[in-house]
Image (cartoon, rainbow, N blue to C red):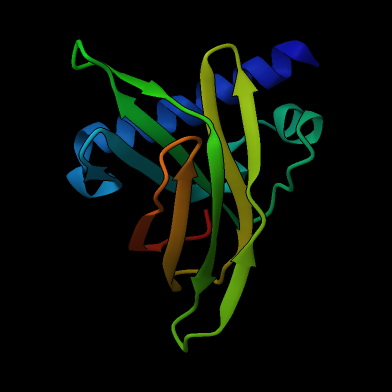
Length: 149
């Protein structure tokens, strides 16, 4: 089970950071903090990994991955703990509240939530990240469309 969790961590972080590097819209800068985000179909997960982490693989379930990053004195970024909450709004503005789970593997900390979607449905995400000790909220808003594979 530990190997499955480590694989999930690596897969989610790779997906998040790969998309961040190719699309600047996948992060928002708040000075010393950044909020990085990615959205992908749950079918991208290996079935064993999804089962080991109590995640549902389905053509109608997407995964939202959030990482709160803090810039160090050397300019490097490290993930930090905190809280994340939010909702996804469909194209007629019906909200679906996201139940984020905190995942920590070694030094890596990130938050994941599942949500339901229809093929090619544009979802608008309104998310608030609260880094521990920051004393302020970091709100982000973005839209994303997933397609059934």
